[in-house]
Length: 149
Image 1 (cartoon, rainbow, N blue to C red):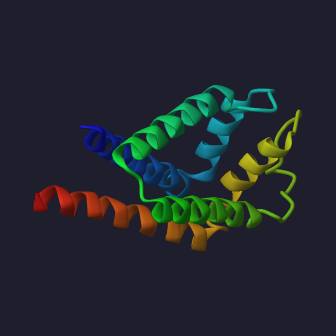
Image 2 (tube, one colour; image 1 turned 30 degrees about the vertical axis):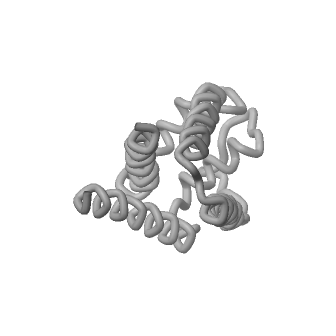
């Protein structure tokens, strides 16, 4: 039961992650920029509420994983690879923004990063490709195990 709940949540979260990155490549910059401007709307942060929800989701996933009997080597490998990919992803946005890409004040570091990502979402293409490949592999594993049972 715990393993099934974890699987369902992971499949949904994986699909959400893939769709979130697809958003960068299928919507034109001006549409993404308008959405970002609305989300920030004169604030330095746009994710305080969703960050709390995502942290709770992470705690639920880890709790279910540990309850189901996590393999410590797989867990630490995934944790470190994921954290490193995120670090490398952010490092790709080290070039200054042009005047037309710069956010309106207040310009917090995370707000500037958000606008940089929207302006040039393909900069971390290697990290995005690896991330997507790993998620797709995981979804394939869920699918193949479901049909093997």
